[in-house]
Length: 346
Ligand code: SF4
Ligand code: SF4
Image 1 (cartoon, rainbow, N blue to C red):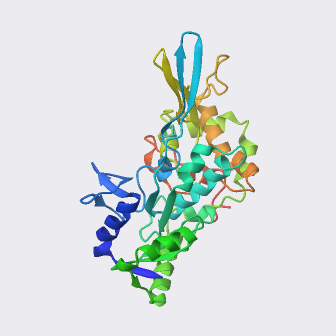
Image 2 (cartoon, rainbow, N blue to C red; image 1 turned 30 degrees about the horizontal axis):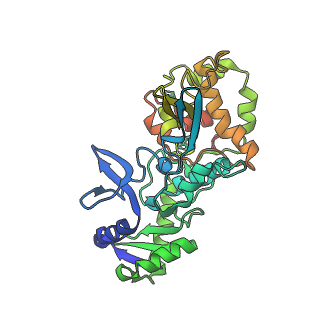
Image 3 (cartoon, rainbow, N blue to C red; image 1 turned 60 degrees about the horizontal axis):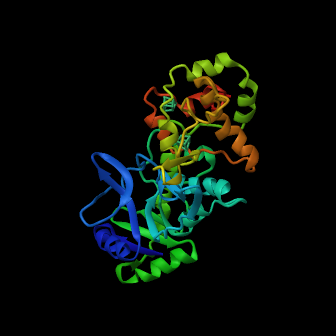
């Protein structure tokens, strides 16, 4: 394992940014997001949760996939194959690393989404364990252990106060560490790392939502599926703004649209939200006409339908962003608990 003094990190970022597009949690107008790094940016590796998740790096908010031209009655198409530069995502929290695996289950299975695959292949992920988890984090409910080495990261990192410690997890990660050897020192204080891991584990166990229990949630949701009065209670204040879905690292609905300037145009896709009233609206109407049905769909997809298709894995990583961002405080954890998903409340 290797370490670097935190005060030397800007030097490391400079070197990385000369070879890759480097994205870090950067403060801009009091908001923390993964943004391209350049000297002078305010990097925040203390705060555990960025405003949006880094999913826009592998699934851009808008992306053109086909161009077309009309010349008289002749219509011609042009495939879009814009090269994607190699990039490094530095400081990704374990919940967000995990979300990439959940998206892979959707986009890398046949038929493979080649655009997504290209974004995914060009990225190298450096995870960062969560020394200061937030009160609304509940990743442990999904068997994510943010103190450990996370599957899906190329390099795992821990904050040991004065130092960051790195461990290569994939060939790509090992090679990157090797290429930075001039800036890194050998790390040998295993005892200190174990202490940090223990302290993170303890912090996670002490979080307010740590007693969430999902073992009966699927049955509970299926049982109340038809009980509109229950869903009415959960959804009556929902504004249908879609904020919960846009900040969610695992939500992946998109719309296919045309930009048409009469003689030429583009077909592109952009993020969409199952919580908005025109989602999946078609010529015959909308299959989900009420907010009750839309909210129910979001819960059923995350906690029943996706797990049914993916060996029981839930489509949530407990990042807490939707809990934090919902303007009317609709809280997925409180709803799960109301349905009996509480360890001490069974
Ligand atoms: S549903 Fe909420 S808590 Fe779960 S991954 Fe999405 S934003 Fe995070
Ligand atoms: S953020 Fe809250 S109000 Fe907005 S769509 Fe989601 S649940 Fe509804």
